[in-house]
Image (cartoon, helix red, strand yellow):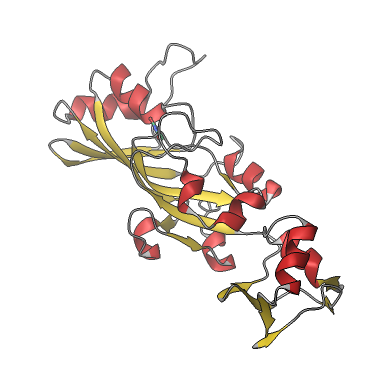
Length: 240
Ligand code: URA
């Protein structure tokens, strides 16, 4: 990989304008290999670079791929109106490097949310052509019945959809809880499907995307982690 100057590397990682990054460097806030670097023109191959800024350790990443365990009462919107935005749960530089949620979860939905600043990744993950199964756990107001599961599997008509939408799979977990697998990501889809089938969703949690389970990441609510290549490979549609 070609070399870049230190100020541009810091800028690419979301630490502010080039001028701001130069100020950090001149102030002695940046170290590489334990040494303070005060030369903003220092040319380095950024791949794998570890540095500290104000004592915090960072590794250069061309793009970031993040999984967040979204708590309730956070909005996925970039301009949240009623609740704090999910980006407020991440370090500041991520906002400046334009990290965005991949699709949306409702403000009251909990569970796995992907975020990235890689446009191609966001596009692939959110494209309806890319049939990534997502597993939701829905808590219902009325008891879960065999009839409800049958309806969800055979398809329910939502009023603004041209054709009925069906779950790929669904099963009862207990009297008021079911697991539902969807491949589409329509607006409020689980809640609207449950309502159209005569029940009401009182809580919703996304547990799995593709074959990547939230449990495997060991994240508490509000916590996040980087996804490595092997974990990202699990986000692909299941092999047929
Ligand atoms: N379906 C919903 O109804 N809400 C979500 O947040 C996700 C899927």
